[in-house]
Image (cartoon, rainbow, N blue to C red; front, side, top):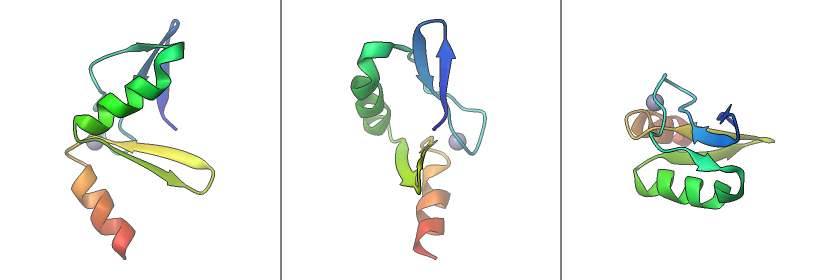
Length: 68
Ligand SMILES: [Zn+2]
């Protein structure tokens, strides 16, 4: 899981490139943050024990990779 802690705010950061979802969320708004990122085309994927986040640019490659 790549969730940057910015003070008490949280921000989703892509695991494959330096992109980050522009909005930050309070610690209590984790569900809203994930829902918004998904609505913006991000991929949120659980791989083993780890949550990974991919921006809309990296999502197609990640989806192809998961089919191999
Ligand atoms: Zn990316």
